[in-house]
Image 1 (cartoon, one colour):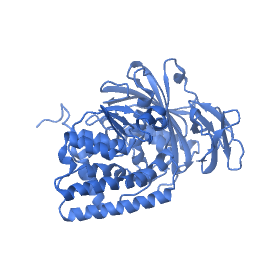
Image 2 (cartoon, one colour):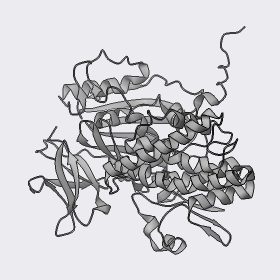
Image 3 (cartoon, one colour):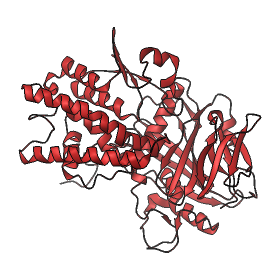
Image 4 (cartoon, chains in turn purple, red):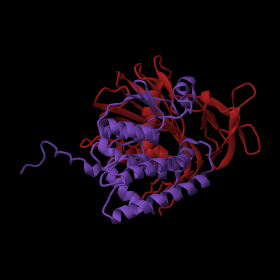
Length: 221
Length: 276
């Protein structure tokens, strides 16, 4: 399974993260998004006329939407992550998958503007990011009061993976996550998941790894 | 400070219509001249001096006393020259350079790539301000690295040398994994936009015949963006040149020399002079 990938893209990271959690091995094909703008060149446009990455190719199947890729990876190798235990859960997963592009456009747009000098109205981008983050905070806060750490059902789902990266990287676009305690606890829970992998700007939980072994030859007894 | 050369663009990727940017708080436009070469103008439309070196376009708001530094090693045949692409950071340009000179953060910020626990010790190394060239040098730096470069197959102890030839530019020389007798050259050229905003233009001259150009670009972008969020949260935002606010350790010798050298030159753009 081949992923057309960019190391700094949160959308590509969603797919890498889900694949790592599901234990699916990806063949990564790096795309020179910046500074080369390779995603706008003919060979990539032939695969995805929209000129966006990621692109996931598995045999004859070509997917160009990251939410569809999450669904595919989960259905293939980690069906519990589909979050379809009840009709309501299934619908709520769909609800969050459809919400996630708002984070991409707002938090992601602010990040591209501030970090890679892409054009955009930074004030408007941050304002719409704030609205989306407030909605997410309210939902996660309500979930926490019912004893849940994740967006849907009792366990993490593709809905969490779809929303997590652009939220975690919002500070890259000058958006402070200080006002969102439930979001910060949720991000911590995701970073602590078995199989979690990082991307630049999203660090692993160092305290989740084993303590380094004592130096050999240290003080005895 | 006006009389230094600063990077403002990649020579091979100049915009078709002039792009606006900031240099030392002043508005500049970077584009192409009629003949196709680089052109940089100031806020009044006056053409500024330009030169092209290390794949980048350099300009100045003043009249530099000396030519831009050179990197003789980068001219060795067989090297691949990599324009990594710019990244903007809300931090002091001097903080960006200082971070580039630091080794101790590798295991914690570049975990399993440039460092890993428990290999956290920075062994003693040598630092000097070379009077003849007026540059800061750190030599005999050694560090264990799980994946020192895209071309590294596994963990190796890497030798480093650091060089600061200009206040907002730093060059590191490190063991080339495919050619252990040679140095890979990795640079960080910093464009000071304001005292707390900068644009970095990393550039590399590597011995690596196996990796694709995109692989090499992504490796370096990955490393730099791992640093970016740390840089944007440093306190104080400006680099303190006076002792008293921060307590350095032996591993910080390069940083101490860099700060001392900046102070000696009166280079204070992005610096804090009185301890807060």
